Length: 386
Ligand SMILES: Nc1ncnc2c1ncn2[C@@H]1O[C@H](COP(=O)(O)OP(=O)(O)OP(=O)(O)O)[C@@H](O)[C@H]1O
Ligand SMILES: [Mg+2]
Image 1 (cartoon, protein in one colour):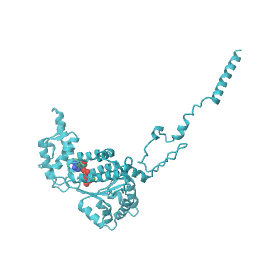
Image 2 (cartoon, protein in one colour):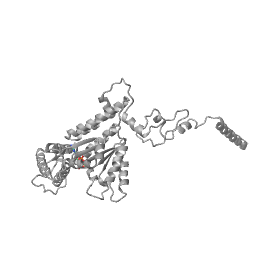
Image 3 (cartoon, protein in one colour):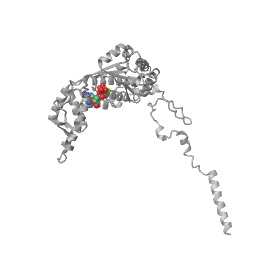
Image 4 (cartoon, helix red, strand yellow):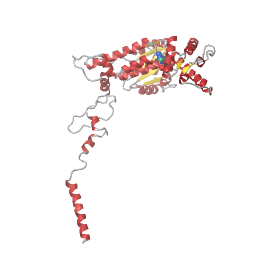
């Protein structure tokens, strides 16, 4: 009897399961369509009304069209760049704009503020950077109005002595061009002659091309660019690198920006020997040597950022140091200031740490005194390298 009841219960359960499988609601039915259209793993919401990812180069897989939808056409790399340059939306002919708003949308105020805040002096350079920024901002708005706005030539030359801020401004320029949509990534690749020119036949072209590949989407900053050309050296492959550079600067000018840096006189000679290069460089920015007050202001700024300051007597000693140092052959403007202040920090730390029983205050830990500065009296003769 018990066996019969057990068999009946088992048969009922099996029948119920069978009926549910055949006619019941499908447990996966709600999931499967989303799964099919969501192969990227992106949540559905992220795809709805998403702005096209114009920062890609168009090489990625196209999104799969859903049933009954028109296929989404991804912008080509060129269209993508144009869209970034254009910024937000097209404007009807009767629209009015303000550049305060345009600057805000492009978020370039921060870059200009950094230029002002982080760099002492350099008034003509800052003015030129502002001018380039204005050109690009106007260009963007012109595009939104549907006006012809060919991409301006943005290759540049920065001339000036060591430590005058060329690399720092190069970095800010890369940021600015990125924010305005003229560079996809906005990184800066720093290079010197050896990064482009090989020693043996067949080395230069691949070397130069590799470097150019790395710089695509950003800035290629070539330091001491005049060294690329060595007319006295018959075995020099520099010209080969220059030829490739010229070609890519022309053909890929909407993908990257070259900044050539070096001393003014050497760059003049370089351009005289390479007129093709001169004609491809649209903006020349000249970085003047800093005067005493500017160097001291740069020093104060550097110390302030690190929570140090010079006592009035220490500032006098620092001026004395600079007066001597500026006359020496390897003086490197703001870089020399930075190096001397690094050394001053070291002496200050040693001065405090070696006086072990004395009580030091917070202010003592911040304040540099004359003995921390290498004054004229004790400054060693020309051997210093920076
Ligand atoms: N005007 C300035 N105000 C504040 N700091 C500055 C200024 N100019 C340069 N510096 C600082 O001095 C240091 C050297 O500057 P940078 O490397 O930009 O000079 P450079 O012209 O590229 O030098 P080099 O020709 O030797 O490569 C950096 O730490 C930079 O931040
Ligand atoms: Mg530099």
